[in-house]
Length: 366
Image (cartoon, rainbow, N blue to C red):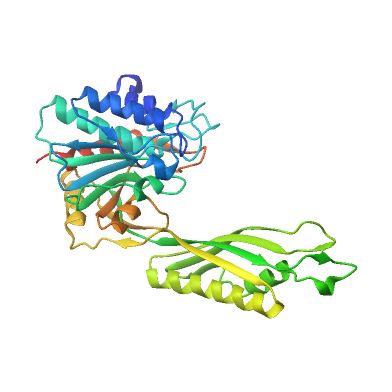
């Protein structure tokens, strides 16, 4: 395959070379705005930067009035692509192994933009729809959480999952973040330990009741950060812990999170300290059933293209979670950006092209 003459690959290469970490997406936003403007559309950035802290808002473009569905990708990468050096193999593109490739989610952006350009060039009948490119997906999902779409938008198709083309996420877990602060009382650990209240001791006792790892087939829990103490001869008066609970069962997430709060508060009360447990949804679970229109539409597109349609459960969050939480029934479509966030990230030429074919089928009339 002559990658240098393939216009879709060329577009992908242009995009991966733009460095845009979470909160610093403006260079990609500027590229997309120029691209869409050159096609005759009127993209704009929304006001989400005031909430996200990014240097740009989400890029929004209403095609033929905006329609009743949104096609969405995110502009940020989890790690820098500033020094990316793409390597072309017989069936795939990789980096040289010193950086990520940036296929997550520049493959999605490339596929969608290329499909729209093709539709315009070939004068295909384009469906009314809204096109969105979000900020801060890799860090907080805050771009999509802050996205305000027209009430007419009922469905969403997100191009952002590592699944090979044909695969799509119709079900995702949800996750709550746990921010725990344990307060004790400082004292000299040798001279007067009885005058202190050891925050670490409180935390240890509560953690002994924490359900680490896989709780059941649907639920996992983890404490990933612990910080506390000042010196070996000081009874520690504060410990901070951060963790999560995730499950495809919303009630299970809430049940486990409340159990964590109970255990820390009980341990703190036992020793005369105090525990503060902040529970916040990072992203909420969703499930799109085979009977729903969005599922059937995606499945129909896959079959039309001769792809093996494979619905999947995702244990990670994406902008599709944000859309579903806001009442927009959204499915995350596989782009084939495999090994995301790692230096071993790659994408097959066939997946890049199939992603664009899928996008073209979604945005045009058959």
